[in-house]
Amino acid sequence: MQTATAETNSGLPLPRFLVPSARYLALLAIAAICAAIFPQGWPGSILALAYLIPLGYLARKPLTRRRAVAIIAAALEVTAIAIEPGPLNTTMGWLTLAYLSLSDGTLMHAIKTAAARLLASPLQIISEMAVLGKRKRRRSAKARHFTLTALLLPIAAATVFGLLLMVANPIIQEFVHDLGWPQLVSEDAHLKLLSFGLSLLVFWPVLRMKPLKVKGALEDVATPAWHQTYFQPFSVAVTLLLLNAMFLAENLLDIKYVWLDGALPLGVAHAEYVHRGSYTLIVTALLAATLMIVALRPGSRTEATAAVRWLVHGWVAQNILLVASSVKRTLAYVNDYGLTEWRLAGLIWMGLVVFGLVSIAIRILRRRGNGWLLETNLTASFMLLLACGFFSFKAFIAEWNVDRALAGMRIEPAALYADLDMDYMHELGVDALPELIRLNTTLKRYPNTNKLLGSYFQNMTVWELPIIQARRGELSRKQQRWQSWTFRNWLIERRIAPPS
Picture (tube, rainbow, N blue to C red):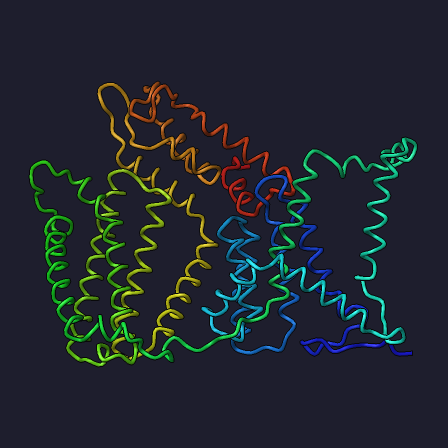
């Protein structure tokens, strides 16, 4: 006798009683994994399983070129989560799964839909359950099949009335205690329940994602009247001439004082000059790019004027030079005061800004639409964040700062001096441990020095930096629990282990 089967969207035959419940099984498995991990602190590499389950579920549909790209991106992100779970990787993992679920549209449309579905997740769950109830009532007795949703009522009833009976009868309560139930009602049980519920709300829209209706591409919208009034070719050309002149003055100053290391006026310190304008000039470049996107709207008279387009190319070139000067300023400041996560993130962001400015020039040159511009920049940002998930920024920063400190280390009459921000090295956590050990080993080569002088080395002995012991203990505690064990920390353990 053949088992009744039904065709899923992927074309794979499954037993009919599993078809409506496979999604819920996956969701419950994800929620169970999250509930087991999150109460112990930030999760470990086991969290990758919570993303691997929806990846396997969503990858069942027939392959297209977009779906193949989405599957590869999601698989890479799950690998990154397995190496090092963290806010960036977990967020990017959810976005790649959402893109896989909506891979028939553009990346911009997928992100917009995913954000809307995530915000509407509680209402979506309620509406889905209502639809399931209506479908169940419409089924005839003969056509009704067993599903796991049929177990919801008996499980809920048994749980509620079982708890009430346990409270009312001490004998039943003692019997339940002998079964080991108190372990399930430990002090972090409320955290487990919270993690379980939040994971349901977060992953439900991924497994039930439906695209939003697209009203039309950005370039298909007619030029509004206000654009024709305030962004006439003459006014935009005059604006570009003024801005080019203003930015030319700023770029000439940067060429003199940043690129050629010219002597600054009295009262202006080099550190103040290079640090003060780094991020402000990036904001200036972004506002300039936004102005050009609005002013040169596709299909407008301004966009069709050749003189305006050439002025824009000069304007973009000046903005690129402005961003390059900001990069040079930041690098000079890093060389003087050390590298931090915010400074490294600023440098990466500046690279994205340069890419955006170049894409604006290409859009104007090739007469592309704003939809192409947004999609190109979103794709570049998405790929960059995907790659960042495999890179340990904290370890890189620690190595760079220690190299800088050792390179600038000098013997002074009083003692050994090394310029290193130990307070910030402490903030980098266990990722900085290998570099701290390397620093400590190097300092041991100076046996005649008992104390390290300097703003961050007061009263620290050469033979043992206290931060090393603290970080060793933290690493050991994390790796001893399966909930917080990570592959990256395992690599750190192997790196700092004494040679056998």
